[in-house]
Image 1 (cartoon, one colour):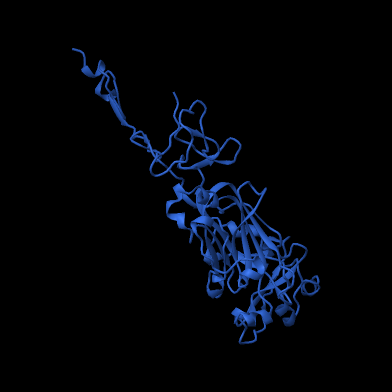
Image 2 (image 1 turned 45 degrees about the vertical axis):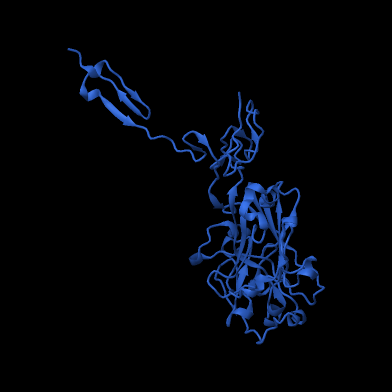
Length: 383
């Protein structure tokens, strides 16, 4: 009599029964169905990539970095510490450098890394030229952004005036994103803390709110954060607002530090005058055989060599530059991957194509392309 297992082979979806001449060769294996966030029981629905820090590990360019033109000393702000420290900075030496790449590495409070700009003279009046120190971050692809966050090094000065810009075309053109200043109208021609209406949802705002968060002595340092949708009426229904969809889209972010602090006479006008004289800094000396005491004392003219000079010099110091958002895929992909050219692109579903799933695939033009929403996935259709 023939063994029924040797002549019968059964296939069930998700299961495979392999036939053999004996019970030892009869095997069963289970392959679980592949979960695809862009489909539910074969029905398409909107899908989104994970929320990430889009800045992590990305290239960033600083217009000014301490020690780029030779070793200098940079000092903590004497207003926030009884014994502010000074650091030797030499961009050519990894041990003494404070490069911009530290802004997009792992932000670890137990091992804080800082970018520091070249020290420069403090402004003598409100009409002094702006500092114009810039940080330019390339995200490598279009993202839908939720926030931009800057964390300053402990005991460093929080800038009085700065501007955040964005680019939608990989740095070819730039548009203002947000202004921060105690003198909004004077520096940027904008009212302080204006209200946004549905008629001007792409209006650039200016605020002095960062001046009231005095947290510069914490381990993490102070923070300036910009929420891209805060105060914008259509934020709760982004799917129905093409204007805001464009507003939160960016490929690059640029921060321009215009003024570190106001001159004393202008600080008095803003009720921000110091009530105590700062205490002299403490120099932190690093032992390294490539430097000796005579060489350090013979640093270039930009080097801070006395307490009075330190009061007149300033620099910017940040530990983290983060940008929260999602890889822009218009509701048609659940993740972004590296393409054959090595660039980041959406893994498009719903018969869509393009780096951002911004069009229908070839031969799927029976339904016009549209952004996937919570109400309709807008899958492209073909014959």
